[in-house]
Length: 325
Image (cartoon, rainbow, N blue to C red):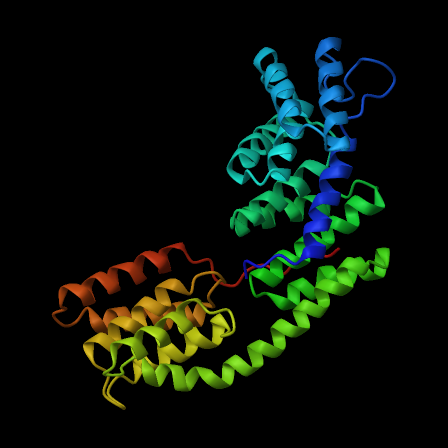
């Protein structure tokens, strides 16, 4: 699910605005996190921050922050702020570069600012790095800042991430927590998306057998459409797809499965790696590979077998339960 609803974009923008407030200097020219920063650099970051708040000249604000970083490459607020500017401008790669640097400075210097984990997680989610985003959102949730808006947003972001990963039980856990703790309207809206997703999943489960019947179709276009749907379409739950494909391979003689159909099954399994497989699924897949290894394979079959082996080596079965919130 790559679609980000408008209200969630607003959540992200709100996250930028609140995080940017962290850059406000308190009690004079000294930086609140790094006392060794020269006062003129603190003032330059504050000036760039004001440009961000006004939204009048982000390019000039980025230039000012780059100049600050030329003098002090490990200035946390400058790195963080520059990453947020690039996020606002839609420059995701650049945003990740500077937010990751800010996170390292944050961790190395034991800076007390939980907002970096949430901001970094959001950009990682935008970049499709869902596992990395999950780690940072969990860090933000498990180390609340005490700021209602920031802590609510961390729960909502984590819930939305689990929706993107198709892990709706986890999504509902964090979103309901946000509703209970903060009466969050954002959580309610995402929960409505979760309900829609689950309804589509239930419909998709009923369509899986018909799609599997098409992966061995004599018509190449029909085969390709079925393979793409089973391999990538989020309407079809990964768990059910994996089980159905494994069953088809295990019963390849009833009805008879062609070499191309077999290859298609292996390809689908290789692509369905966005959720952890169960121990049983891994064992069944390994048994299928052992069965195939007992005969001479064509080059395309051998390639498909090798790709599935690579996929299985990266799988982490039986994930730990979501930490309580």
